[in-house]
Image (tube, rainbow, N blue to C red; front, side, top):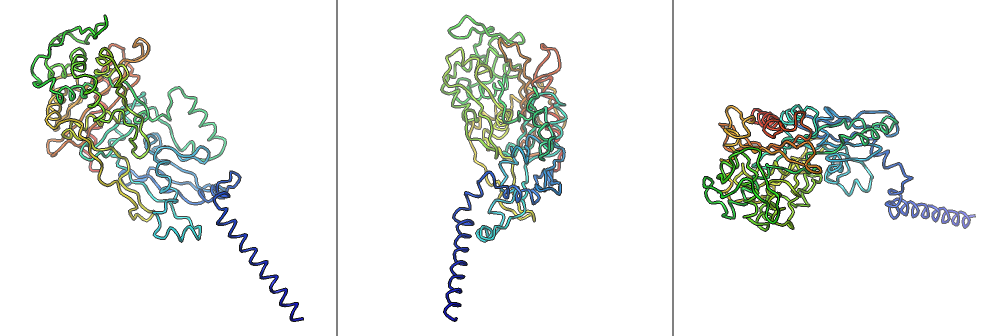
Length: 487
């Protein structure tokens, strides 16, 4: 009898061992394959079984979570969704994540191992951390001023702090409510179809994902190239520029919006935005130095992330002289995002240096402990400090007595550059109205904000569309918000 009991015990031990081996095979060896199996919904159920961390602006969450009491329990909610959509993006149970919701998904979902001091133990126990928080660099007052200024018109605003690269405002219009895409009921599908069918493309982030011909705002770059290359040594000396100016190798003549541009100095040509002067300056500088200067400002950079990707702004290095003339006034193949043009203005305000822009100040656990910070940002020298000082003076003159007087702010020094960019077949499209600027309060030691504004569909007569008339008031409102803000 004892022998039979012993055999039964051995057999039971073998069965137990087999069960343990099989459990190890399923839970360890084949765990990844099961996790990645489309039929396995456990990961999705676990993902939405806890509240997602928040995205914060000025210490206040602009996101939240709603308990639906369903299998996928928590849905994402948004405060002032259209206002912050170009920053937050959406977190949808049906369509995934975009922008900050995507770039910082590890922190927000609680999956980032840095959220726990014992990540290996969590891997063993399969415990899920609560979602962490993402603290942005945005200035809420500036964001609201930009959104109100655009007033639903197609366009975008980007504002940065020149000395640090902190992004203070990032607005795209028209916008949408990301909360409409959060759940998984039929209304979400209908919202998705409606947004994608909208000809105004409200889900397009025009501030960082759309490039435009920058028009005359690019003359800041051309002026920097001419000064750095020594083509211009005296901003008050005549530039030997005919008006009209025949494009090299062609019979096409370039003209100006106003008279009196012939042979003007760089100072006066910048003040009145003379196309002929800057087109000739670009040709005199040459394609090599123009390309190098544009690259130093950030053009042709594939790698910029803030932390989500930014569309590449372009300056074509393969142009002939006629094309170079047009490229030098922000036309032909020259294209830029509003964020890129804010960086151009920031470089002037910051002594010729560009700080890499960034949108996330720090990430934290749900309890507020810091997980990661932005840290020191790389610096790139876009132009010589002496060139930046001259351009700062020229931009200030545009606002005090040139085409940008609508951007003037009492109690502050403001520099700006207007632009009206032609586009479309035969330039038949409604011109884009541009304004780039920076502002320094009278009590400030350095400029506090640099802004770029583009308006695609200015609601006025074509001949009256100008950056100074349409875009400059929006830039002024954003700069005033920053200068007056306590954030």
